[in-house]
Structures are given as C-alpha cells and as structure tokens.
Length: 536
Image 1: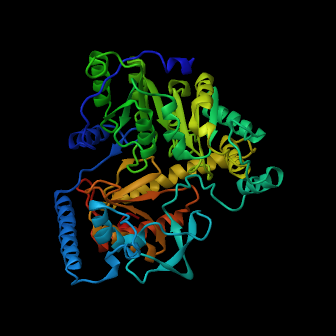
Image 2: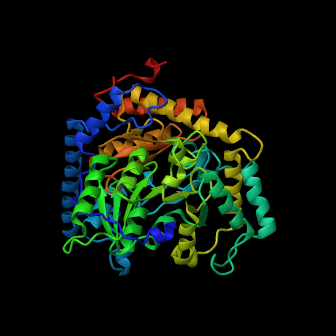
Image 3: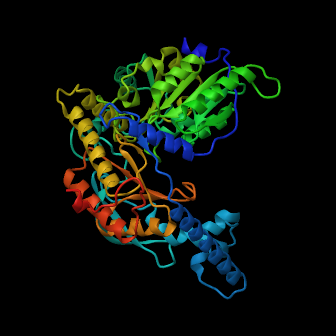
C-alpha cells in the first residue's frame, strides 16, 4: 500500500545547490542532440543556447544605468529638487506605512512602475485564440489607470488554452451552463462535510480511467494542489529532491512540509544520481541516520523554459534507489502524448511507475482546479490528511462539467475524433511555430514538442519595446523579466493552442520577424539569421 510505504524507511541525503543551466550541461545536451537524427522519436532533444557575450554585457550595463539614474532621482527627491509624483507611492501622503521596502521599493519606483502597462492587462472577452484587451491609459506614470471604453482585438499567444477548450460555445460550454440548472452555482461546503456531489465522484472516476491509475482526488485550486498536499506526504526526517526549476507551488509545499529540500540541476540525471547515492552513503546531516523516505519532485513541462522532464531516466533512478516520484503535469496533461495523457503518454510509460501524478484543469481543460492520481491507498491517505480537501470549498458544478466534457472529448467518449484532432493540431502548430522561430535566428529554449515556447530577449528595454510593438500589430504576448527570471534571462513566452489557425501563426511570425529585425533580437550563433520571407 502506497500510503503506508510513504512512511517506511528509505535513505537519501543532500549536497550543494547547483547553478541554473550550467554551460557545460547546455553544450553537452546540444552535442547529444546533434548526434541524433531529427525524427519524431527523438523525444528528449532540447536546445538551450547560451547567452551571447555582447548581450550579457549590454544587459548588465542596462541595469547598471537604470540603477544609477534611480539612485540619482532618489537623491533629487530627498533634496526636493524633483517633485514628480510618478516615482512615489501615492498612499504615503495619506500616512500609510510604505507598501514596499528596501530594494523592492527602489525597483518598483524606478523600473517596474515605468513599464507596468505591459503587465496585468485586463481582457474583455473569452480568452480563446483571439480576444479583446481592455484599453487603459495612465495620467500619473502608471500608478493608476483609467479605462477608455475601447477594446483592442488581438491574437492570444499568452494563455494556456492548449487544446482550445476555453470557449463560449460548443459541448463543453453547453454542459457547464446546463449543470447550473440542475445543481446551482455552489455547494458552500467542504468535501469532507456536505460538499461531495455525484459529479465529484463521476469526475474522479473518469480521471482515474483517463490517467490509467487506481484512484484520483480533485481540488478546486491548482496551486493549492501542490502547496497543501505535499505536506501530507512528507515531513521532518524526509528528504525531497527537487528540480531547480520547479514551480513556486511545489517549492512552497515542500517548505511547508518541514522536510529537507535539496535541488538538483535541471534535467541533469548525473547530478540527481550523485545526490541519491551520497544520501544513502551519508544519511542525514550531523547524526547520519538514514532518511525516512526520499521524494523526487519534477514537472512534466517546465512552464518558463519549455523543456520536459527526462521521465524514463528518472523512473529508472527512483527504482534503483528505492525513492518515490511526484510528477507535476500541470502544463503537460492534455498537451503532450498521442492520446493527450501527458508526459507519461509522451514516453509511452506505465502510469503505475509514478507514485504521485499531479495535474491541473486550468490549462488543457479550460477550467480550474487540480488533481492527484495514484494508488487507492495514497488517495485515501490524502482525503483524510490534506488541508486542501478538509478545509477548501468544493468545486462547483459548472467547473466540473467543463472538465468532464473536455476529458470525454479527448478520450473519444463523445463518439467523435475531435479530441484526437485537437491533440494533433496542437502538435503541428507547436512544431511549425518553433521551427520558424529557430530558422529565423532567434534563440528559443526547450523541447521541440513543447507548446510553451520561450524566446530570449535579454535586455530590459527590449522586453518593453517588444511587448508594445507586438500589441500594436495585433498580437498579445507575455514578456517576462527580472525578478521573475534571472537578470540575464528576460524573455517572451509564447503559448501555442490547437485553436490557432495557420493564418494566425503566420501573422504572429511575421510580426515577430518585423519587430525582431527592428530591435535586433536575432541573437543565435548556431542558426543563420534569416527573414521570414526567405524561409518560404
């Protein structure tokens, strides 16, 4: 029984923290890819081209200049020479304690606030392949906004709507709407009290069949599925080996558990095995007692890098060292594999080789919430001990019927091949979009089959310029910079959907080509710099 196994004795230890994306690791990975033929079976070939030296120098110089001018403006403000309110928190005049402290306040005043218009944009329609952005303007240097009443129509390259189920029409929307007539909009209770309806059981039963596991449990929030369930699985005296690029929900859950956390270099199986081996040899620090158990925590698709975990090797290591495996399939479930069943399906592996299968409904299924699947003993243990199950409100009917309908379509239980069509369309769109970006000379991270497509921008000014220029051309994108990424790793993250047509992708590629040429974003040294028209 897995629940009882999770409290048995196992051994593991911890070593030094590894540097993110080591150059040697990148170059070795790239050379390995070059040795392999570019076939559909080459599942693990990924590319992480290192930052060009000139781009790194200019990025550091850009932040240095921003800091210098920020300190100068702070000095002028303290001297009452500069009186522009845009650099000050307007609440300070009302006698409030400053909302931000130390460097966070400095960064917010002098850098983030200046470009806040490119973040947190509100939308005014369904978040499908195209949507309406609500137009807003600021009269006080981005501290506050006023809405003009206009909307900006744009192609959506930022939402996680991988299979295109986030729509207002069709069988999923109809099922969700009709469920309100039968069950209302809320249960106002927890699952452990009076909050379990027949449709909760139906969802968990269908999920178990879909994932190929004994049992499943569903939760109303994806973030909480990680943050509040990991503490029910590990505690003090246990060791968690976590990929250094794991999502913050995983990191928070591990920290809340009280277990010892050790990171290993991203997708580096040699580093993972070294830490497993040393753990067994040395045990816990100080008294060297064996660890109670070991839990390896990885993601299917890493949402900021576009890479996928090396599941076959990880499973081999976890069996070799008698460890347990927690796989977060938030971005990979539905979007990867011939049957849309995630990384396990992508590698054609046995789901029973993964002890804890986690995923969310917020992406491929167009809904909200998360789940955990595995042995029945594990799920029974979580039902009793998880704060997410005991204290959180039950998922409402329309949310669950959206999930049920989308899963049935993916599995073909609706009597059509629409699910398979969407899975194949997403795969085709992903490879088409990625290949064109790479062929144009942009640095693109990740696996060629990942629908998360990060393109490197590096310099802070270019992050802002790219976002604004793309929107001016009718393309809405998500740009990410420091402190969400490391100083040298600012990027734009495209999310591809099955609902994108070839015409939409071509329009986006044309805009990227034009803007990339205007602001010089073709950094690649491995691929020739070409314009889109030259690829046709």
